[in-house]
Length: 150
Image (tube, rainbow, N blue to C red; front, side):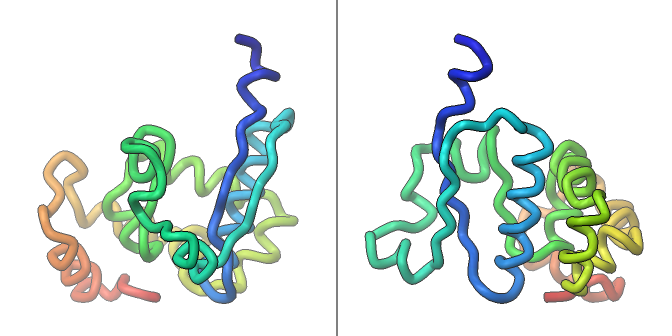
């Protein structure tokens, strides 16, 4: 199977005003950079539309959300705390070009975590091989260190 054949799948992303608006832009920039020959379609949906069709976390097959091919997180500090080095590098590479940077730096968590390098300080707070089991423990650590932001 050639690369052109692999690039014909469709993608659904969530976009709404606020944080998800910037994340949708970051995703599209990443897609354009990493797969310039992508032939499929990208659909942007809002949560109420997905809910109306009975969708949610379980709408995709097992392993597709928070699996080997995707990364789901609620807030940017938790992404830096929990996710793989590959996920962090992909994010930072995707939003590095000035055209993208001009748009996404308006979102304070991206500006602070990525461009002001506070994300590296967040990563230093946690042993990636021995993360706390509960999300609350991660949030509390981030809050105590002054890195928690919505």
